[in-house]
Image (tube, rainbow, N blue to C red; front, side):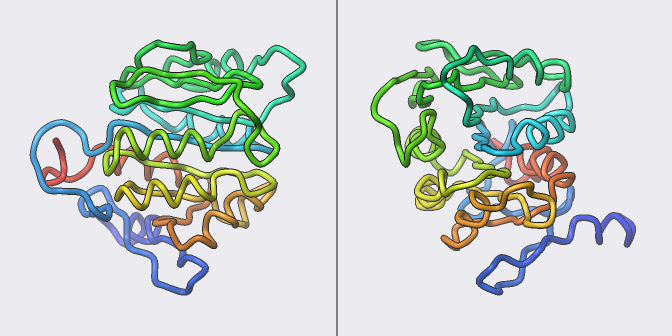
Length: 233
């Protein structure tokens, strides 16, 4: 890997001042990842966004290859009074299949599942999705916190959480849950965020592993999910 590529993968420090770890296609060691061989390193990527999220999600998902090996579940805060066109819009911007999540369906690798408006989205240990209209969490439904917490409980160290642009603090409790189960957390950096409330709040927990500009998140996900030979299952 040349110097230019190596520089491209140099990560920004988190807010606590700790140096960020280097990320490359040849050397990556997510915290808590046991060594094994074969398969992929992560089974699921949970993504949360709010204000400015459509553009951010479009850029991240468009950068993922058709052979991406993990399932992706997405919470985007939407107006509950209107039918969402999010799945239709994103399906035109990525090579992966995008659909609105349905209660009881089982997630599949390389598929993107969008939480419907006004429904919490959770993922069970058997990979089945659950939709709920239980009470608002921090004034929102769907809740990133509930999604992240369910993913942490179900997939433990084989889960990645991504916090993209958005106002408020949704996702903050959820990233703590992901880290407690030794998963990996990515947050969008301030310079590329239209609204830094959600990423900034996540970073303040000191549970974020990688703080990245928007255009580096998709390549990072590809590298993480692929893993190194000693990290794959």
